[in-house]
Length: 312
Image (cartoon, rainbow, N blue to C red; front, side):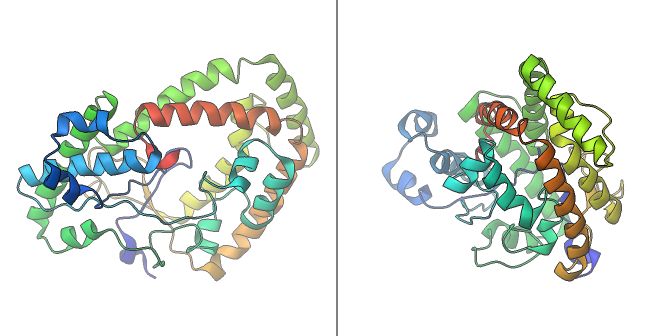
């Protein structure tokens, strides 16, 4: 696969790489029953999949009003980092054995995207999951038509998020950034301000330094992200910066194309990542059971507030 084969794929941080899915199932039912958009928030169930469906139905209605075809589509694809399994719930509770099982194979979850592209849902490879039909719709458009389509979709995305959450967002990127800003504010108060986590973080930092790892800060939030950030930085260094001429206004200025790595090429990187992730876990045996549930609660509540339901 050459870099040109996936020019549209951009690497974002692990905390903000929530992939927007799109969906079809209830569109015909709602149209047939004549349910007005303003009542749908009250009449739909509150489950995660229902929320995603509702958002995509609103987008589809809006795009139709603007003269564009848009299919409401919710992917049912599952991968190892989904939150709806017992194993993942154990891992996110800070359970040592569950975290170890994950890290023994996937490390921090960075280069595993390339070493296990199908398992992790790497968008540059084919999976058994049905393709988002809206990609084909856009692919059939001219460049001018595609720009108009995307502008309309941004407006419809804003409408959907406003209707469901009451939040004003400029785009999907802005939606993610606002949610992350809320997470950072709460983490600063509730995690970095927790005396017990501060003590546990100091002990973990000393352990990591003893193993030869650079630890710039033992602040709990910095420590929890330290290992993953090291390998994300390496991942980004292997990619190519998105040229200004191709970068949309709402795309982060430091956005890069995903590196062009085959599974075989990714495995040496992943092997180093796994060793580092296991050392990190051993040093954090007492830290993670306190940190992970606290962080997970903050993240889930922020994603729910801003309508990032795929991240729940």
